[in-house]
Amino acid sequence: MDMLLSMTALAITTYSLILLHPSLRFGDTSVNGIEQAEWEATNLSSGDCNEEKRNMIWNRLPKCIPKNESIAIPFPPDPNVIQYFPNRIELPRCSGACYENGHLYQSCKANETELQDVPVILETISGQTTVEVCSTVKLEVHVSCSCGCGDIECNELQEFNERSCSCICKNSSVRGQCMAQYNKIWDENSCTCRCRQDQWKKCNTGYEYDGIYTCQCLPGQVINRASLGLIVTLVVVVVVLFVCVVALGIMFRKERKKNIQLHLQGKGLSLSQLKQEEEEKGLTDETSNDL
View 1 (tube, rainbow, N blue to C red):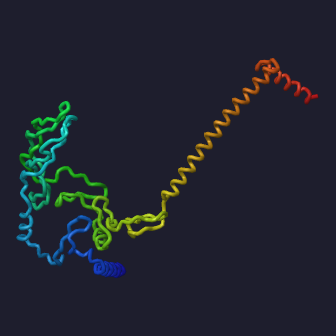
View 2: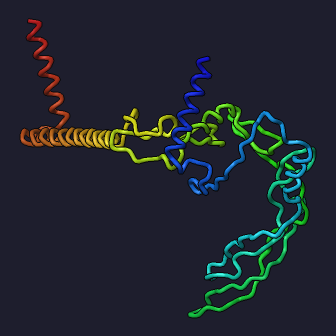
View 3: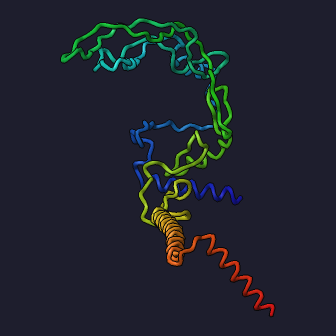
């Protein structure tokens, strides 16, 4: 009962938002560059899609045969080439969707290929001038096609659907709840519900954009750029101070050694003699203490 009330409230909220935001209605031509369409209201439980209608829909799909497509010709590897013509050409290729093998919506893949010589004109540098050179480039041509899925790898959040020849999310039941929200879209790759691109916004310092749940700027829960810069500055200062302390310690030791040598030279003693005197003095002090 609680779930029914929650879904009803969500539906009413979504419908109200659609009424207040005309751009969210299906009649618009595009949203974020994606073409939209006005769908006919259909009772999903009516089962009105009979065999005749299904065959009509499947038969509208293109046949799986090589069809001419505009193919980009790669730039020649010769560094003297300035430009070349043509840079695109139509060649037979296998592509698109197909319908075969027991009501499967699959992809049209190349079954047999060969290389074909394509004539081109190269504009090259020759001394102080440019010349046009006629040449050829070998491009792949699809001779025959077959209807199949090919090599498709799904991630751990997806499972392979043989009917659509694609990877679908395991948690597809969540997709309906996501699409019911006007400001959300379903990401088929990450299998997550996220905010629409037109909802993205730049947040002030100390705030972060929540692109999963609220689609709003919220107080940042992680280190922001300002605090990150402060930490980097503190680390640099500590390193510099450490280097300075080490350098001062080395300089102090060198200066002390130099002063000892000057002291010895003034007394006409060597370093070994000074050590011997210190040892003898130490023994004398110990004897005095014993007495």
